[in-house]
Length: 592
Image (tube, rainbow, N blue to C red):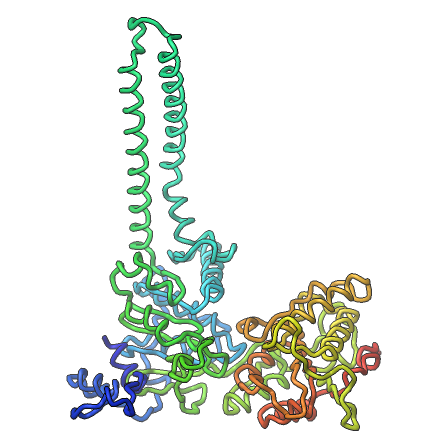
């Protein structure tokens, strides 16, 4: 109930959609929106019934972490590599007086590590945790991290976390499958079912023998009753065998159900997708002490509520500045379905502070450990109010510093703009966008695909491993075209390993990273139309996947027609390397 009060106090309740122009909807009663109804319902709690201006909460205002050894009932020390903002996030999440906690984790800020530490300390304090995310991949990532934590605990004589992953086995990654509910049930009931299968084989053999004797008796091959194999006796024995077989089946169901019940009852952490949290076996469990919704900014509001109502407290972790939930219906999107619970305006606070607003306690992670400073500085200024800093550990990292990678202009450049326009402003041949022949809704750009292929070949030739390169495009047709070109150049032997380079859509690459990222923007037209490239969150995701090198291939005139993307190109011109898309030789020439 506290979760509901706190979130409704943020005016996140949908507005009444009654059409005032519809005569059927007119009556003499005054109209109120759903938020007004909720405020009236929660009139007994005026302190959270209306939104309040956020106030700063310093670290000194928060309860301290219990750093006693785990063996003594404490949570142990905070990880030594946690920065102040990460430490603050853990303290904020474990503040029991806050019904809802909001943690924003920009790209590369160690968000998943913070989530795992929150889970670890919550379990150490005796709390039951429901950990969810919108996608199976995100849930499995948490499962794999918890498994690694347990492995480390075993080596250090620590306490393991009892966790279970709920979901359809075919949707769970192979690395997380061992922790699934089905796999754990199989292990718990293995002895019973091994014995049951053995007995079932004996029963099947005895039944076949009985049927054979019945057949022989009918054919007159067996005579007399003294041998105790009368038809009546045979049928009675077969009936006994059938009853035993049914009993075994029923017993198996009971044994499996009891094992499932015990595993879920004893589990300290239950993991499932947000929608999967609506499964009957989770709904039957007592309310959890805390629910953690990872990648919360990618969950639709209806999906988010499924796990939220199963817990006493909620921790929303994600980044509203990255991609929102995918909603294909324009009407539903316009109606607010694409706006996640986490998409709130957060005050621009420093790493040392959190904020409190009507029961929602929030904070932001402010140091990124992924990208070269020149890559992250753009995202910091455009998306995070200048508050996202690069750790000194990664601030100057380059491709040329990796073992076996040669020094070239490209491998020494964290930012590279390959412009499909010449310096005189002429568009290179074949670099216009066209509709894919098999699809009227997806676009391709042959010239850009060729430029991407040549740049990837140059990186591989310099010694960059195929697994360290990722190619992205917002258009599925362009993804397919680039894959084909990389496979062809690899087959010809001109760029060995090019076919192993991952090529994916921008949206599917969120949450992942690579040493070098090459982005094909595709758009090139006389209208300066950029389509959904104009979504600033998509551009943020695309650029911030890179650790050491990001290359954007595109038409500077068309793409630069969008003010936001124009600022991105200006940043690359000022801080990186710019070349025409057909200047491959110079970019990949080895330097002393």
